[in-house]
Length: 258
Image 1: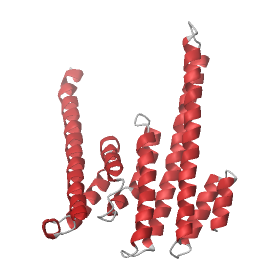
Image 2: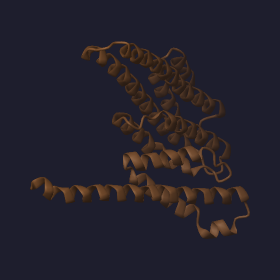
Image 3: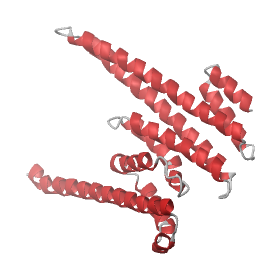
Image 4: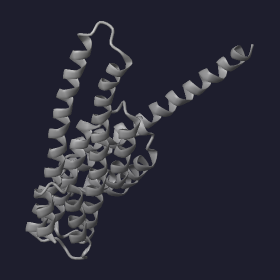
């Protein structure tokens, strides 16, 4: 199955490659080291292909924009050419986010076959998840609802699990929290923030922080608590903003009727 996954990837059959990787994971056994590295190569390789294509589409869009600016009175059809190019980039990003959401589901499933003592494989898989989410942070177009919706799917499947990084390996936490805040602010995804807070409360208790002799673990827990505070601050600001908007709309309603 591993050979099938890599062969599909090399032939440009990316969806089939992801499906083969999923089948490898769902066979119900722990992934061996070379299988984990193969999964990493396939996932990041697919993402990189999308990034290269996005860069090329952006170049084409810029060329079409410049060509349109040279026309004194462009027709609607000529304007639509530019809009179609912009839409092409959004569609590409949508497909990418769907791929990443699948990758996160597969990675989480792979993690479930390892125990707490399986330190190295769990760290490897969490870092893979962090890289995928970090790339998502950089590529998501916050002005596009379709892309945001797909991004929220990836968020829902993978984000909270990223906080289960071992305390001695707080890799990618900044990327994860920035995406968490993005999700709360732009997608109103409060459920995930609640799960995050619950996790922090259970793993960052006062006793654990005060009694721990592991400096890095203590820093990790304090960092996580600070990030939870940032998320909840964002939620409060969002709710206050929504409340003010509703109040303004209500106060203007009688005037509109009059």
